[in-house]
Length: 165
Image: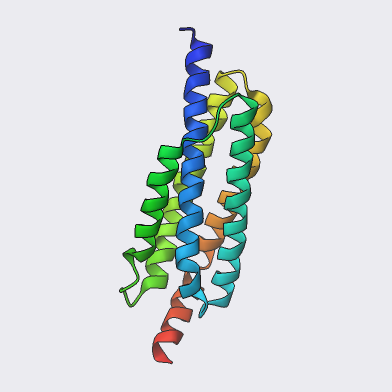
């Protein structure tokens, strides 16, 4: 198998994996969103992130179809189940909002790194025309990750305000 074929197989696997990651993000946000209503700014950004993740998954679907492939239904089922469980992981924690924000920042870092890998694989596999789509999604993840990180102090103060109420 040539290096280009190996890179192409790895690229398609990466696209399927990233689709599963976006599916997990969508499920996790859906589970957490109702409990974030007491934090209006975070709630609004989570709604936006949900929409973006849905768009990112659709973009990945389009890239997979373009290359004659499709998402992995098995991976989608597993990540959907993981998202459901992850949504309940911090429910009983009194500081759920803080733990969810920290987990989201870590998840954003993972997604950004995953898109960087996909960009490199796209180039290596001869699919450099896909890079603009991948860069768009990566920038969206970076924007949300940066926003979350910048707003940690306000989340802590809002959490303390909720506790005092």
